[in-house]
Image (cartoon, rainbow, N blue to C red; front, top):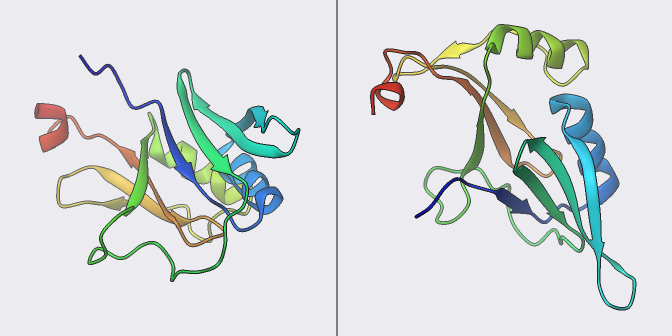
Length: 137
């Protein structure tokens, strides 16, 4: 019935800053933008990979604490998988997106690295280990 997750949506405080961050740090490119009937901008779509997008809605307001907190209800984080985490982290490091290109190893045996977007939303990069519960499931 369900085939995949198509997108995740965020409401950034500053659209230009968020688009620049995701393009520079992750290499996701602006695919297209949708507008309201009156022509005002509505959503910017950044392509993560084939069939997968990050939707950025205009109009975010600073009426909350940073999103990431394992104790809060609601959005926790976005996780994307990569084929070679060491290479990916080196590229992000060279773009100035992180200060240390070394991955961590999770309890599940996967290698990962956590980053924050400009609005404090947490993004996880993960390389699945063949012996991890995710791979075996």
